[in-house]
Structure formats: C-alpha cells, structure tokens
Length: 333
Image 1 (cartoon, one colour):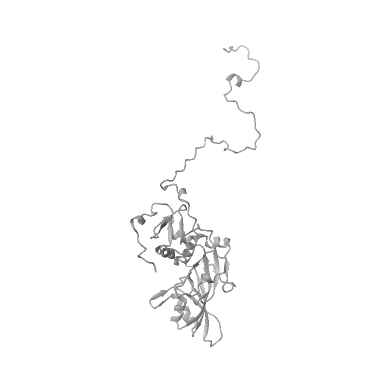
Image 2 (cartoon, helix red, strand yellow):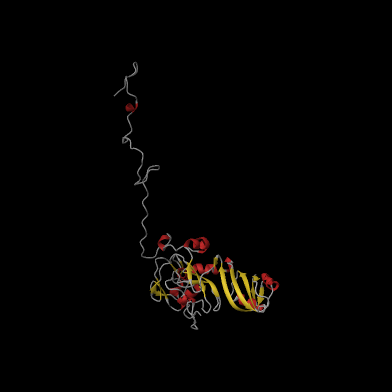
C-alpha cells in the first residue's frame, strides 16, 4: 500500500524537474532495474529516494543524465544493457522481492551472481514453469501490456471429468463471478480411460490473475498442478527446475528489439535549455575551406604538380613565343 500522507506535492515539489529535459524518475529507475514503476512509486512515498541530495515526495519528477539519484543512500547507476533470463520456477515460491507473510520468494531462490532482476508477469505460489526475468523494468512493463497479446501456454493437471466439446466452448470466452475472460484454446490430452486426473493444454493471451484455475474450476475441475511452458517467443524447453539461463543478446534484439527503449541523452545534448550556472557551449567555428577542396588533414594520393603562381599570368606570357609577324603594329611600352 502506498502511504498517501507522504505522496503529496508542495510548492517546492510541484515544479521540481518540470521544466528540465529528461524522463520521469519512475521510468528511469525501472529501466535501471531498481524495481517496477509501481514499486518505485512506493519507494518514493516511503522517502527512500533522493534527487541531488533532496528527498523526493512525488514521482512527478523528471531527471536527466546529469542528476544524481540515490536509493537508501546508494547511488543508482545508469541503466545497463538489457538482459533477459529464462527461469524454471518451482512451486512454493512467491513471485516477489519480498513477502509480508515471510514466504520464500523467487528472487531469494535465484542462483548467485545474477544482476538485480524483475519478473515479466507472475506465477502463482503453487504454479510452476517458465518465468521471464530482466534487468530492464521498462521492458518488463511493455511485455506485460495486454495490447501486445503475447501468447501464454500452460499444461494443467486437474481432478474431475471433462470432454473436448465442453473445452471447445472456451474459444468464445467465459464469465466467472463477474469477470470476463477472453478466448482460450484448450485441448484435452490423451490419458488412461476412466482416470480421475486429466491433463489439458491451454493457450491464451490475456493472462489475468489466476485465470486458468478459475476457468477450469468453473467447468467443475480442480487444478492440482499448473505449468507454464511458454511465454511469447520463449519456451521452457528442458530447463531444469530452479535453474536460470540467460537469453543470448542477439536473440533478445531479434525478438524484443521493438520493446527496448533507448538510453536517455544527457540534458546538455538536448540543445534547448540549460540549468542556471551552466556554461553554454561555444559555437563551433565555421570552416573556411573552399567548396570542392580537400578537408583539413586529408592527403591526396595524386602526384603533386608545380605550385601555381600567386598572381595571374601577364597577357604577354600567355601569347606563344616566336617571331613577331611582320607588318603588324609595334607594341608600346
């Protein structure tokens, strides 16, 4: 919960950073892998973030590369290159950095040596399978947006009896306790005849909270195991339980390049505004080089000829030498 008693704007805060070029601080810290934007707002409300030595009380602040931002007294480094990891989440872990109930979390269980990471979406406490992790909070947010319609595929083991005809009706969507769920492609896997547990493969794009469990419960099934096997273009494959594996940078660029934001340029490069006390950059001197001449420092490979005269040739020098024609007027001077 955000403490709104801390989340208020005074006269000094109202214009803080408003006229400066840059990006909102929540976006910058998310991109640097500190936390999601929503969590950054909580950190600011708790008074844990400072900008140039001043404690922030509102996330409505823009920062530039020249500003110094700290979290709990530690300087927040600039965003690093985007990294993405596949993680095989085991059941019994909360997808969170901390849990008020003291339950073990995904980030406590990650192998050592990894950077600070943020999950792309979540998996329930008892769900398992593929969880994408990244050091780029902006990317995580972009991949979670419903507009991207990324496909999620699950395998669910459920207790009860069901046939394919009833599962096919999920393609038209279903409402459960006032919540409308979109189209789901559900396929009944082959199993032992008369078995009380069935395996179902489900493909969906919404990914609402506990969607698979609630939909199958509405059909009279009790889910006792749920495994996510793919998320967008990434598959769980044979990744062992509890292991994390980094996705190659080339694959990240190919599959996620459209969702990765570029780094913020320093305010001095914006060219429009400068902070008080900054020395304005001196304009570059215009080049005195004549059009068509070689730039300074360039060397021509052509052989050099005689140096041209500094003054134009006299008219007498321009006439071919030889005997003067007879009968012509003598030249004067």
